[in-house]
Image 1 (cartoon, rainbow, N blue to C red):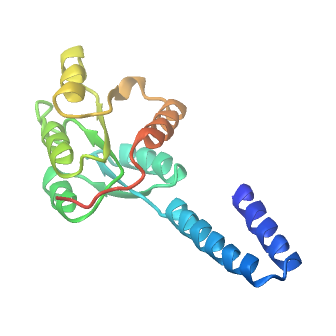
Image 2 (cartoon, rainbow, N blue to C red):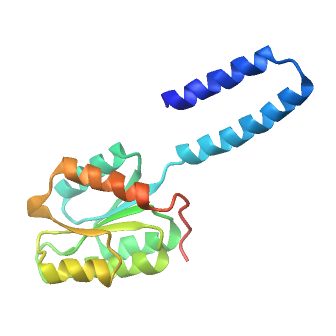
Length: 178
């Protein structure tokens, strides 16, 4: 970023002006600490998208990539569950119903349970075309979803803002799966 680059340049210029050993030694520690901070900030966090519709997969992946997340897409619960046991995720978008022909399918709820249990630092959002108030309240209160979104009311800009807000509130350190 521009701020980081400005700080780097300033530290280098100051170092060149000062010739004392103690100052250079102290500056080395400052550079090391700053480098570690930059490394953490540059760390790419992963997002899990559990959605069976290819069009929605593309839309969600584009927005999450733009937010700086590395996106992994899964179409069914079994694939996602396997990955939840193996990888750490910072953000997840989960479709409620993962069956094209079975609109009563609630695999997304099972995925939310797994995310809550295995990766408590992961921010999960439930996305559905079949939402009602009871489902939304249950997803948030019982299954740890950050929010519940209806596909009919989905707006890219609003979702992007939601992702950035949720990431700013989530813990920076993502813990590995339990």
